[in-house]
Image 1 (cartoon, one colour):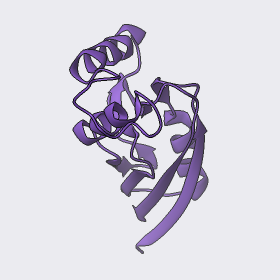
Image 2 (cartoon, rainbow, N blue to C red):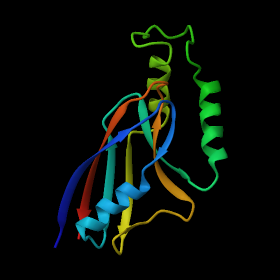
Image 3 (cartoon, helix red, strand yellow):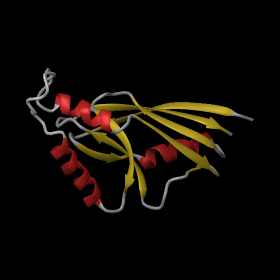
Amino acid sequence: MLRQAQHELTLATRGRGLYEFTDEVAAWLTRQKVLQGLLTLHLRHTSASLLIQENADPDVRADLDRFFARLVPDGDPLFEHTCEGADDMPAHVRTALTTVNLSIPVHDGRLTLGTWQGIYLWEHRRVPHTRRVAMHFVGE
């Protein structure tokens, strides 16, 4: 029988960077006692994003941060929207270039991630924020 489950995670960041939360998602999924289906994650913000990325070597995450710093630098005079600081509009552009939604298949009650894959919240602002991720499972 097809069923649905929903939940919202609250994640605290310490500022710009990637924050893995795979374990929190997997633990919630285990509590739902599901078998197979699809899990959708939706970040309810416009200056951070969601990402599936390597979770073995922290250099990967640091390299991503450095690449985006070069691609969309803080304080670029191109941007007019600076209400919340020099990192405000660059954070929105970084989100537009990435995503706020992920869909992950579930098989035998487990996320079907690769060996070195983890689920990350990518905070694009320099100061700490509290971010909310809506989770929705459909399946059996």
